[in-house]
Length: 150
Image (tube, rainbow, N blue to C red; front, side, top):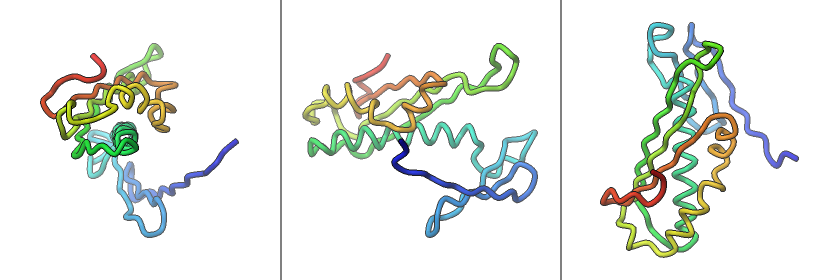
């Protein structure tokens, strides 16, 4: 049963460029395909997908730590979406790798082990995307110490 419906509206500007209207009061976003199809004047659909996964993971990690009154800021996340051909020769997102960097050293955060075990399970976008595309997540502290993932 659906608890909520999210609606976005896309209007073509020209060729592969679309204005996306999220809702009243929010700025529109123009998307475009990279050359040679488009002109690369806005993020591509693959970039939006990577951003959505990274944003959701970052939000989920922050929320999980904030529940324990911990301050991990500023979180810095880098997402790589590997695009290639599937078995049928069609271009697809083959996998997504997200690397989340905490803004503090791990020893300054209480309940970190518990948070790292759970935060991904609460990420709506990543869990949904992960049903069709492998998503690998790594979390590091501010010194570069790997806390989760290989």
